Length: 261
Ligand SMILES: Cc1cc2nc3c(=O)[nH]c(=O)nc-3n(C[C@H](O)[C@H](O)[C@H](O)COP(=O)(O)OP(=O)(O)OC[C@H]3O[C@@H](n4cnc5c(N)ncnc54)[C@H](O)[C@@H]3O)c2cc1C
Image (cartoon, rainbow, N blue to C red):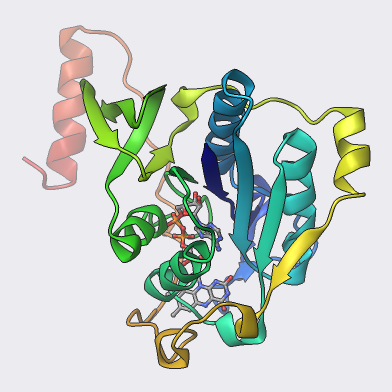
């Protein structure tokens, strides 16, 4: 079985701040990590491999050369192969152009069975890239996967809903998007880290991915970002304690004062 895992390197959002003047993320000095949902995607691929020894796991990412670190981490966790799509020509791509580039690269990997993505990246936060890759490749997709069984030529997945889950079956090749409930990602082992730095991370540049130049970068991106801003801080709330007449009167007086009654 051949599994492809799409991995995005993201800034650790617990460390990110917005520049109040430009509204842009201050990325300088912020550590980068593998997007958390993508680690669940990789863990699931590795578990399938643990149970099916003939499985190969390829991780693929589009990003700057610094994403090499994320690729090595994936190799150290147990991936067999790492491909980094990297080139100036790809810069400025929105989710549509990004998924077109990744899907075009995946077409170069013959006979894959499963593509695993995270549900959502913690920086861009759109949850669009996985489903768009499936559309570009014209294969079925199951999103929000919280449990997965591979059986013969199909997958049976529990798809998380707000108030429960749906059980969905699809024939392979299929694209799945993973959520954190799917599993607990394993740690890298010291031997894994050592080997990861002996392995090759393949770099696929513009010349290696047969994309239409009109469909990538800013030119090929239908999205325009007009403005980014952080929401204004709200005033402190008032806590009213007790369930007696006096508290109710206080509440009514407050609402009255603000002309809400
Ligand atoms: C006009 C415009 C210009 C932009 N220019 C740039 C730019 O120059 N440089 C830049 O870094 N970003 C740029 N972006 C942001 C970039 O388009 C998104 O970060 C990217 O498309 C992923 O979207 P997302 O973060 O919402 O991922 P989601 O859709 O939330 O991600 C879902 C899943 O898809 C997979 N995935 C997502 N992105 C990748 C990836 N790159 N490689 C592998 N797998 C992935 C992962 O499995 C992830 O969990 C730009 C966006 C816009 C709108």
